[in-house]
Amino acid sequence: MTFLAILISFVSTLSGKIEASIEYTKQDSIHIVRILQDAKTERGNEPRTLYFGKKFFNTPYVGHTLEEGNIEHLIINTRGLDCTTFVETVSALSLCDAHNARSFADFCRYLQQLRYRDGKINGYPSRLHYFTQWGEDNERMGWVKSVFESVDFKGFATQTISVNYMSSHPQLYKHLKTNPSYVKKIKADEQAINGKKYKYLPKSKLNLSPSQLSFIHTGDIVSIITSKDGLDTSHVGFAVWQNGKLHLMHASSLYKKVVLDSKTFYDYSQGQKSQLGIRIYRLTE
Image (tube, rainbow, N blue to C red; front, side):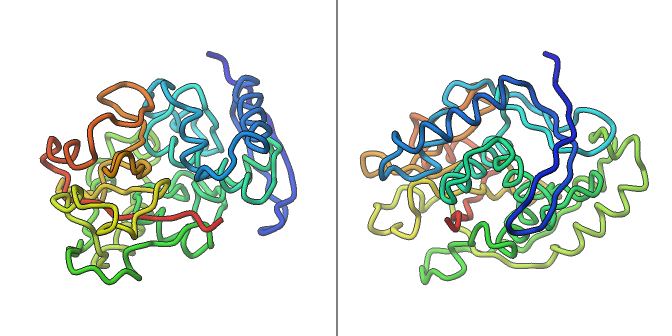
């Protein structure tokens, strides 16, 4: 597959002029614009992230799609998604729809805002690599809110952030391996969030009823907490209530595609030993 790389400039109503090298195919841009146009008449009252997420059902799971090239730039690939690019793509589409912004340039603007610290591309370290960073930055920017922090529920546990995986394993990351100077910056970013504490819902609580978990809405962004050393989360997706049970819509490495998992979220999580539970973010549309 050959990408079309262009330089596109456009005006952001929130952050002034943004100039970025954007990599995509004609197929990607046509797909994005068509989805946004169809949403005007098709979506109705369906939660935006659910509506747009379903548009990518059966899209192949493909990892490392953001590692193309040697210089950090905005990459758009709707033909292959991993769990994070799925969440970012759907979230950017949802923000476009919420603000009646339906051009491809609008989509690129929102995607860049979500993916990079302060919405600005400034080398590989400016990408929000850890999902705790992603949530913090996007909450500060006004795109999402962390749901559990304002909820009074006695079943929450507490996660103390302790991340170092990227700086400890630079050989596993193309841009860290080829640019050793980035490792110091990544380590500083890790230290900036280490020690912070966040509420999470233990996976044992995922089989509670919709009334007991009423603070989780269909379409909420789910961050799955992990016990793996040096990491904060292991997977992301969207929460979906179905027949009174919570399910996960995600780009699945197991199924090799984007799915609404037929297993309940509780059953899914019980099969993942390193998963501890979930944190929830909600788009502020």
